[in-house]
Image (cartoon, rainbow over all chains, first blue to last red; front, side, top):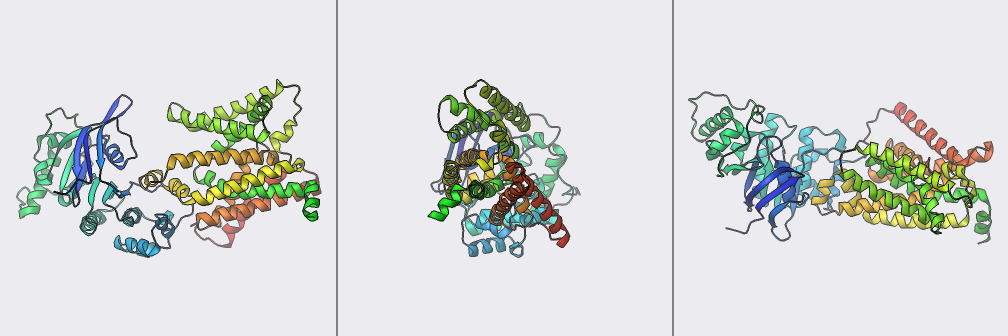
Length: 262
Length: 274
């Protein structure tokens, strides 16, 4: 196995008294897609910010491969309305030549917006612009914070599809946060369920049976995901549950996991 | 040489040359004030200038230097205080702005030997600008414009998205510090022209006016300089012909330009702001 792009050991982050990330271990290689899921306030964003190097850890170790180029796709681009900025200018601020910027925009399907103002983009267009902006730097590691936020359900599937294709083209590692459990389970290699500490981790098909996962997300969600996977693998539709009705019920009302580590 | 000498010997021309120099740096820096929502921050630094003047008498350094030192100290204090989130930033700025102004006034009153034209400090005394002031203004302008040129991409990137900039290796913290130093410098050199209470207007109004017509950040900075020039030239003419105070006249002209640009741009076409 090749050397890890990023490896973290016993990473802990505290904000004052509050433990936000608790002794997390993970390693990511080229070609891996790791998705971090977990309820609100589980420390997902803090964890990836620590990996990005923009959040200081309280203890633990982070190792990054030498000359690692990271492409970061933040949740939003909340641009001040007083700052006039076109898509082209924003792409050029990466320091890459125009031709590269144009092909990155074409790759994420928004090349027609080159002359448009960044202020006038829809949620989905903005995400694709941010993805192109990360792409143009030819990253070894792509880090995405809820890339499908503000994107409609069809667009979400297409976006996750695109991320997988980009992983193949760039041979990069991908680490992302997502709330779209059903899509994640279908698209990702490895899932880490975070609730301060790593509740459980593994392949999507296995993780939905994990007691810790069921405890965190509730039985209905876990079951619907298991169904989804059977369905996905060999057209198993006896349960008759409808999948894809959103995940709003997933993030509330659970107790802090108090189980053994997986 | 003799023409330049004649110009510099005339108080009106000195005021004009100095004013244009200030507009040259206030334009691009004002854009950052607007983009980063630092208007109140600029105000706070400006208010502390009076304290800086008191300080410079106390330790006998040039006025400009005293003002720069206090602005920098205040900017650092603000950065430290704002980490502690118990007070909202605008409350904190409000406290420091007015306290700095009040402490400055009190401190100056303890120095009876120092004769200071307080109105001039508060509202500007553009027509009393001397050759030494011009030297400070143009020295500051060269320094600030070269810094801005070199740092432009990083400053712009960290203004657009700070975290993205940091991931891409932009030294965000260092740039923030440099930007504050530039603010301190522009306040020190512009103080004499429009006074501590009106400096922020000179930063914000031309930049906001330029926003209406600009399609790129660079265009906005350049247009802000142009509108700054118009404000200075117009304000001085107003002051010359109607015998009005020069500093406020400059700000009034800037405001009038702002109204005209926003009014006419809105009527001429419903072009969306880019």
